[in-house]
Image (cartoon, rainbow, N blue to C red; front, side, top):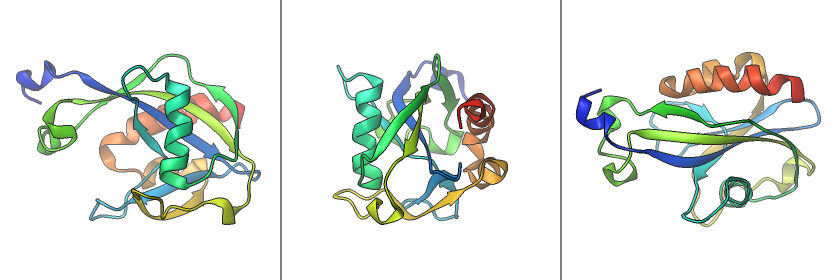
Length: 157
């Protein structure tokens, strides 16, 4: 990454690990990705919005349901840098990556409550996956964050 990109701030983001009653994790494949890479729901925190409120808003915007209960909030923030080829192309070129506040939720509904065909869909498909394969399915530049998340959230699953 060039030194000028280091001056860009991180975009504040809420991340959501949503687990079902079997301990599997919700992932979706992004509409805007050519390769089949999966990710957990996440999204920007609006100015003046607290991270938990943002997380709950993102649930509705990305998976069309709020049938969850909060199990754990990760202490602190996790950050990642975008790969060089995405700097200046995403988020109107304002950010070098994201700083993420992560929440673990237990899904309390049924699979039929999940609707990724929301007003502004972000996922083209979704599935439940296990923690042992989660990291391998993620877009490469986010894998380290996902490794850390699995390690930190597993005691609460």
